[in-house]
Amino acid sequence: MRRTKTAMSAMALCAAGVLLTGCGSDAPKPAADSGKPAAASPAPASSAPPAKAGGATHEVTLEVGGTGKTAVMYSGIGSGFEQQTLPWSKSGTAELTAAERKVGYLVNVVPGTITGADGKLQQAPCTIKIDGKLVAESDGVQNTKGCSYIIKE
Picture 1 (cartoon, helix red, strand yellow):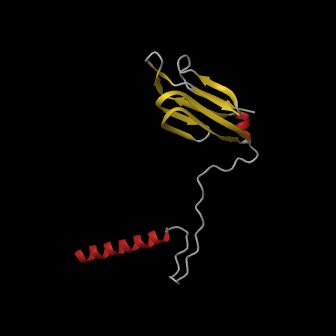
Picture 2 (cartoon, rainbow, N blue to C red):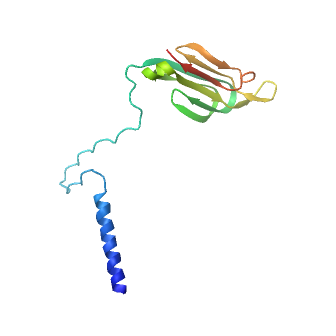
């Protein structure tokens, strides 16, 4: 009985090995070492979004005012959520696809809190500039939702 179980286990392991070997990648097996460097394998497909051919390009500047440090969340020219030393700014290019030019392309910055002149916590002030033109701002007191703007053409 033990011999049968051992034989069946060995057969199952062999079958699993054959299946796993056959289910591997389509990459060619390495050749025997001939002393020559191996040819580079093709680079894996990039996870970056495809190029936005024919899109409109805009220069975007995000700014957060105040002093000290606070968390800043932003998107539109990359994205991030990091602790920053104030004042802080980030500039970059937003390239819109044809569809984004019609429906819009969201750019936003949401600053964390700072200590205001009155000693109370308040949201840090922020601004967004598109192609050098001020399009959104928040003083952090009256408007506490941060800054956002939808670029449309």
